[in-house]
Image (tube, rainbow, N blue to C red):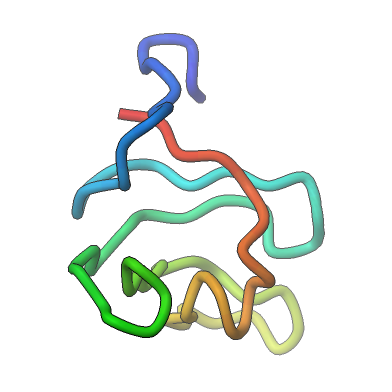
Length: 72
């Protein structure tokens, strides 16, 4: 899935970048990435939740623990 993409390093992700983690959350797409005073950047990820199976939007830091890597 990430073979044709390069990992984003040293810069915040942009909307449309791929987010990948090796936990149950799996992978998703960055929907929002904007400057935020409290955290530096506010990042919202759209991904599939396993049970019950549905599409969700999760805050990268609060709900996903700030884990994972971004690819462009």
